[in-house]
Every structure is written in C-alpha cells, then in structure tokens.
Image 1 (tube, rainbow, N blue to C red):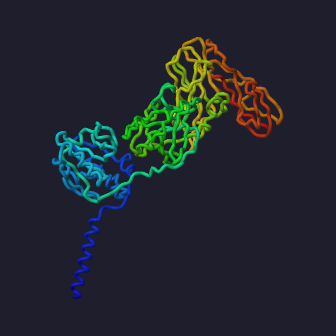
Image 2: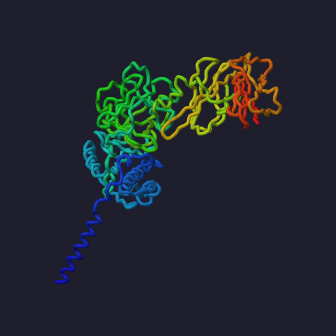
Image 3: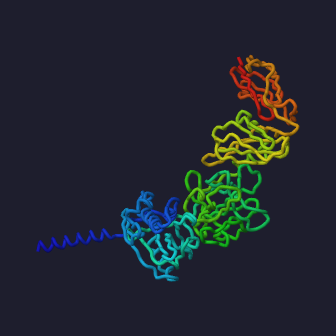
Amino acid sequence: MLIQIRKKILLFLLLWICISVYIPGKSLAATIDELNQPGMFLKQQTSYTCTLVSAVMMVRRAALADGDSGWRNITENSMRGTAWVEGGGLSHEFTYAGISVGYGELPGGSSNAGRLIQLLNSHPEGIVIYDRGRPHAILITDYTDGTFYCADPAGSTPDGRIPVSDARISVSSAESYWYVVYPRVSVTAPDLTPTRTIADGEYHIVTRLNSAYGLSASGDKMKGGRNIQLSDQTGKADTSTIVQVTCLSGGYYKLTMKNSGKVLHAQDAGRNSGTNVQEYKDTGRDSQRWIIREAGNGWYYIISKLNGLYLDVSGDKAANGQNVWLYSGVESSAQKWRFIKRKQEKQSTASFFESASPFNRLQLRASRVTKDSITIKWKKAAGATGYIIYSSHGEKKLQKVKTISGGNTTSWTRKDLIPGRYYKFCVAAVTEGKDIVKISAPSPAVYIATSGGRVGNEKSVKVLNIKKRNLNLKRKTSFSIEARSLPADTRLPVKRYRELQYESTRPDIASVGKTSGIITAKKAGSCIIYVYAQNGIFTTIRVTVK
C-alpha cells in the first residue's frame, strides 16, 4: 500500500514538472511600441542572408517580450552558427537564446492572408515569410486596420516597420514561414488614456530633432487644407508658428493654428502609418483630437485619438518644409515635441532690435571681406546652445538669415554679395533649458563693406589721450576719452552709419557715455571700457577708481 502511495506521489510530481516546462512564456514584458523601437530592425550584411536576418529580428522581438534585456546582443553574426547552414540557408528548426523556432508551409495565393492573420494573433513577435521565386524573406510584424506591416532586411527598402506594399515580396507570393514555437509571449498596447498634461495657451511646438524647428502650416492661410510641416521658428514675430492648445472634456486636446483658426487633422481620417497631417476646419471628429503624453525631460508625444499613431517628422530630419505625418509609435526623437509658451519669446518679437545686449557679450566684428563675401566672428556666449544671425543691405530692415545649432560655432560667412556695398549684421544667442528656449537680445549692429568698390572699412581703433590704455581716476571725477578709428585703406573712405561707441563692463564703478566717451568714476574698483567702431573692431581701456 505504501509503495502504491509513493508511486502516485512520484507520478504527480513528474506531471507537475512536465506542465511547468510547457507553460507558455513569461508574463507581459513589452509594449507594441517597444517591439518597434529604433534599433530593433536590421539590414542584411550579405545578399543571401535575408532569411537569417528576418529570423534574427523575430527572435529579438520574442526575447524582448519575454523579458530579456539583452535582446540587442542577438545579431546576424551571433545567431549564424546556430540557425544557418552554410550553402543550405536557414535551418527549419533551431533554438537560440532559449527561443525555439519552427517551420511551416503556407497554403499559397490569397489564402496566405488568413493563415498569417491567424498566426499573428498568437505570435506578436512576428512571422518570417519566404518567397522562393524571388528569392527573398521578410518579417511580418503585425496586421493592423486591414494592412500587413513588416520589416524588410533588403538594403533597398525603407528602414523600420513599413507596409508590406513597400517590401520586395508580397504576402500572397510567399510559400513558407518560420515562427517561434517557445516561449509563447504576449504584448500590450501603450496606455493611451487621455489626461491633462499641458495647460491651455499659445505655444511654439518644437521638435526634439532640433528645437529651432517646429510646427507650421504651408502656403496661404486663407486656403483650406494647408499641409503641416516644420519651419525655423526662433525669433519669429508673426503667428504662423503659434499653436493654440486647448484641453477638451475627457482629456483630449485640440491643436489650432493661430493665424488661420483651423485645427490639426489626420488627412482623410487615415488609419495607417504615413497618414499625412493637415489643417482643417474644426468638425469635432476623432481625426482632429489628440492625446498629449509625457515623454520625459520636458518632451511630449502627440498621439491621434483616431488611430493611436504618433505625430512624427518624416525622414527624421529638421529642416524648413520638412513634412509632418502620423507614424507607428517608435518613440524616437522625431516623435518628441516640446511646448514653448509664446510669452517666453516676447523679447524676440516686436521690440527685439530696440534694445541690444552689451557689446562685450559677443564682441561681434568683421573677420574677413572679399568682393562677394563677408565673414563675421563673435565670442562664445556662456550657456549658448546656438546662434541666430540677422542681416540686411545697409540700413534696410534686418532679416534672419541663418540659425546655427551648437554653441561652439563663433563665425559665419555670408556669400553672393555685391562688391563695394555695406551690409548690416546682428547676432543673438539661443539658450535651451529644460522647459524653454530663450533668445537673448541681439548684439549691437555692425556695418561692413565688401571690397572692390569705392568705400572701405576700419582696421583698428586708437585711443589718443590715455597712455598704455590704463587710466586711474579718483571717485566722483570725470574724464573724456579721445579716440578715432583708422581706415584699412586711406584711399577708400568709410561711410559712417554710426560713430565710435563706448561701453563699461562695470557701470557701477565707472560709467561711460555711449557716444560721448565721458567716463564718470563712481566707486573704488576696476573695470574695462570698450571703444568699438561700426564694423566691430575695438580696443579696451582699463579704468581703476581709487
């Protein structure tokens, strides 16, 4: 009797072990967005390894969904020794990194679609399909809203998750497939519950690719259906780049272009990746409502209520006129946006050029001139993440001519100019913080002439009545600087747009008249007085007050 009881216990334990071994894989460890993230999909290294690379991508997705943080280590080279038969192709059955892969035949033709939909329902990691007629293989990633999507390892096809119509083979032409036998994994869609994340107001909505560029609409504001695209927004004074953000009941947002009163809209109520975005009159439809979800560090995702697709910069490139569309959520920099309140750039609108920053901050000046070009240079501004250059011919209205990304650049050349003409320049520093992009007041204007004409530029500034440019003063006394600029060529007169100007680094110690050059000593200490010509060439005077 005791022996029979022991046998039953042993049989129960063996049965429990067998069931444990064949229980489907681990619980949820990834979202759909994570399965499609940048770096997940690969291109084949040789012309004949399409099946291997497609299988690598499938195994990577299965590993991530099963909780394997080292899925990036699964590569064409690492899996080749296990899954690939030299001269024979991809093995029908293999196990790599704890993931077992099997093989099957498709029914062919139009019947393939139904079979693949059935397979994808239980294999969110995807299915590798192979067309012997081509021959070529791709990874079918999902079937969404009536469309098959895939990752094609061929170098001639687009990167990432794309519609099968953009791949080298079709679903109906495939004859066989590979799938993950074990473990069985599951994924979930990202949480798209609408919540209030951004306060109502007027914003520049700029891209993480380059925060100088943000949403705008192309063409005449009076015409309907304008395309939504990027434009350089820094320092703009009009409303063409302003978006009114309004949170509606339920937590969904409406995004209205300020200069037209029309809202952002998924064109033709499209539901597939690549759907274009335009502006349209507000009809209250889901195609015009948005979820704004935090992406970390002050950035946000903008997601369509209609289809769950993300507002995305096509081509991952920030440039004027770059198209903005909807794409599957891969959460890349092209899908991250920052909302900059309009009031944060008031200093750079109507009164932008009325008050300049101190000359000493940038020390903007001429560097080199030719008959058709002028090179300007400036001092690096503390904390600057970029610069904006404004220019005009003579005294005409300044226009923005260049946005420079990167705070280490300190020179720029304007080309294709006319010989013997004066050109005006200003530079403003851009400082990007966690939540704002701030544009400083511009530098004092400089006037520089191209060569080859009848006018010239200064080459230096000379102080006439201060030896060695050192001046000692007693408190509450004054001194008048005598200085003049020297021309680069005595045969070429300098047309005067302004006379010499003066600036003190410590007006509380010794102030100086901007155009008079009269120094007033105020309290003990020392400072520097700048004397600069209209082309930015300067000299300095050290003043000590006792």
